[in-house]
Length: 186
Image 1 (spheres, one colour):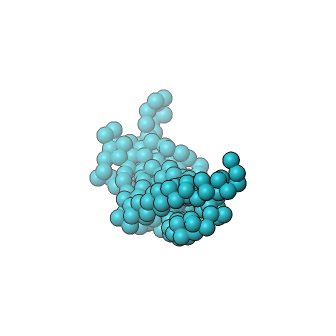
Image 2 (cartoon, helix red, strand yellow):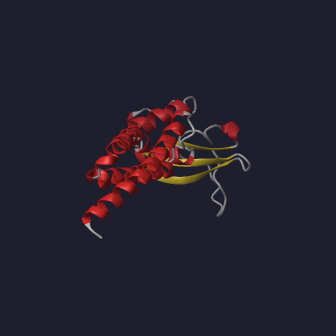
Image 3 (cartoon, rainbow, N blue to C red):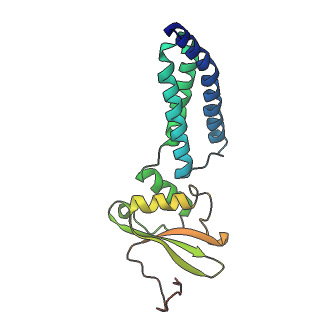
């Protein structure tokens, strides 16, 4: 095959693949607009992989003039989806935690998330006890774990949901009778 044939085949492929990529990204944006896009690290990872693939398609199709409009549209959509694929930073996570957990954890000063150590604990409403999920975490790691376990603060955030997850300052002691295999109670 000649270089001319390869270029023509590439352009035909771009005319098929780029519109499909556009549909995928538009669907992700529609889910986000409707509040249906999961806010977990796993979902963000999938979005990052989609964006990487789409940006790669744009780069590959640079030499195909007939794909210019599709490439431009896909690039614009990727730019809109990009912020949704980023992991939230400390400030965003702290704001989310305070908004969702408000009355429960109002006594944790914001500077503790920067300098403090934390434990992530799960309340088992059926057994009526706390279990450690993770201990001795930085504020950022604790907030990320809380966000992941609560699907971005959308589930397991209140006592009335039977099971819920919350953060405790690292030096918080839970009552435990010392028996092996026993769980700790608040």
